[in-house]
Image 1: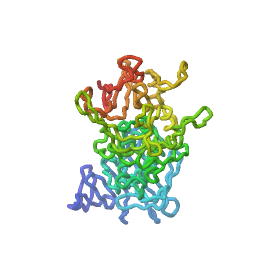
Image 2 (image 1 turned 120 degrees about the vertical axis):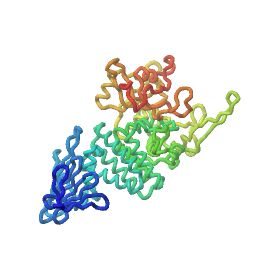
Image 3 (image 1 turned 90 degrees about the horizontal axis):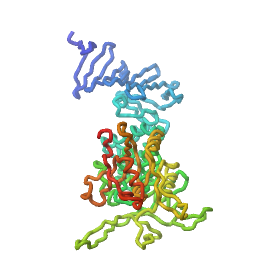
Image 4 (image 1 turned 30 degrees about the vertical axis):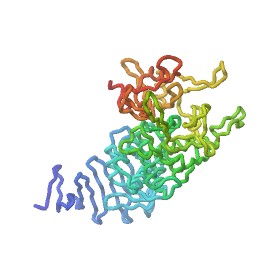
Length: 539
């Protein structure tokens, strides 16, 4: 019979036709219509043309059952090779309406309201957030392939919402989607609570759906979301750029790794209202001059993000934190009873016009870039003890720790670098020198990244990883300089290129922790011996 066709696996079908888009349509042995896509995905329909199942070459599938009332249940399955095991869920109608419930192994019961299914096998429903969501059957194939990492119900909804809002905003989804996947992978590695991931995605979606902002236009709001996703996906590429903000940049890096939900919440609140409320309940309103994109942020290229420039999300985070520390009184000098000795609550940290200084050196005229950063009080620049304008936030380590508590409510792992001398009674910089076992223990406990001083306390950086060479016992430290990786090294390196991120030995770390007066080569900037995305085990 010329109407009967036999596939390579022996299945017999009839009424086979080739559609204009290249798909096949045929009737299977059970008498049901089947559509087969070019990638061998098949969707089977019943006599009423309702989807019965959708199957993928990966083994993932979605199955439906119906009764006289309509859709009765649907089951999702996706095979996975990772430790989480295969993905399986079942949804059953709750009563005779269009609400469905799903009981999970964790004892939780989830609910979807007003559920409908379309011809593609996609489920449209009202979620617990009272927003409509679309559970795409094709996403099961993406789970099977490893493209989607986290599969909790709330994460699925948050991912769907962020993907939809980002697409509607015209964001490059190939780039953005890649960072979303990296963020999910990092979240699993860091063992973040799934609700942190949900809140992170929802906060970014809220920014994209914000119609008005006191400081940022629509394009800038998109840029904030894109650069934020880059930062929480690749925290090793967060950069202070040409700004003397290493102190709060280390706070930002830790937040991006461990508290992305708080990171995104700060961005959402400042974008929508111009103000931010810390975890301590105190609210700050950074000045407009602190948030206007500077030279780094205006020329930052999302296609080459690891460039040594600060991006817009980092600017908003850093400038909000610094100004919040001043505005809420955390930068004040107080006595032992908490009485204010020096009130700095009117000081603000802003970006002004880029300043340059021209001087003659060895008969040559040299122009020095002095940057945009300014510390101001009542419209005038704050001056230091030398009578010169202060261009940094003046935050030593204890103030950095205070900013962490305000930002995400905890004291991060850190290497101490200051204290009171028993001999003079004065504050002096010195550095704790962590040994190999201590750093390995911190890694085993999940206490990475570690905030650390370098250059004898003149610079702040973060330690992202440590690794012991099993052959030599040498400990390697992945040190984030927050300045990117300079393309040119040594004497040919231009000023402002930074000293790079990468792996150094523990001995090298100890040298930069010590103060310059303690010996030759101490307290100096360090160049990575191995680049950050390389590994000592390969050398």
